Amino acid sequence: MNRRELVTYLDDYLRVKEIQDSSQNGLQVEGPDEVTKVAFAVDGCQATFEQAIAAGAQLLIVHHGLFWADPVRLVGPLFRRARTLIEGGCGLYAVHLPLDLHPDVGNNAELARLLDLQDARPFGEYHGNDIGIGGELDTPLPLDALVERLTQATGSSPVRVLAHGPEEASRVGCISGGAAMMMDQVAEAGFDTFITGETSHSFFHHAADYGLNVIYGGHYATETLGVKALSRHLTKKFGLAATFLDVPTGM
Image (cartoon, rainbow, N blue to C red; front, side, top):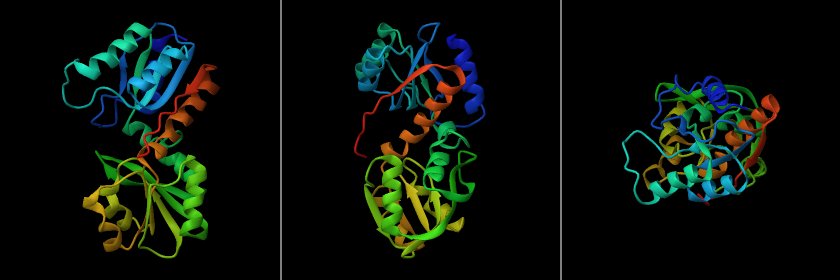
């Protein structure tokens, strides 16, 4: 497939030009004109770049790319990463918030689907868009049962669980990655349980103060879902060969 046509499709499908973000979403490193195999990963790093090239991919699609809001110099590890892609004949496409919030292949849409949440709806305003998705469980679940369901969904045990809400979860809000600072919006939206990726000391007491159950499923683990869903979508639509590169961080 022609790279330009594929990038145009991705830009439109993911609405990368419409969604304000700190990431410079879209094509970040050009790569070959023709693409027959696409690799997918959460992070744009030396390990995934080397694996993508070894797998014979002409394009790597990641959630966390190389270039963000602030200007950078191509020195040190960043230079080596860019050189690896260019010399290896592999382009790089990054999609951050547009993949978090996408209604079909987004991280949070996938979380809601895999957790079998009903009446799913967007919530959680960030950079002018609702990036989370929440809904109702068919039947209230003990918190440990919901933790097990999340573990099955992501293939990874949660990093931490804070049980400050009801013993049985009923209304669950999902915001992948590092969204602990959005706990106030979770509570305001009426959810009793919040699933996100990771936290910091600053937000430890928020869960108790808001009376929320919080499950930290891992930043990496909760953000493998969108790139995998996008991989399935592109494979089905264009018949492209695809591979997921698993480089977990444990966080």
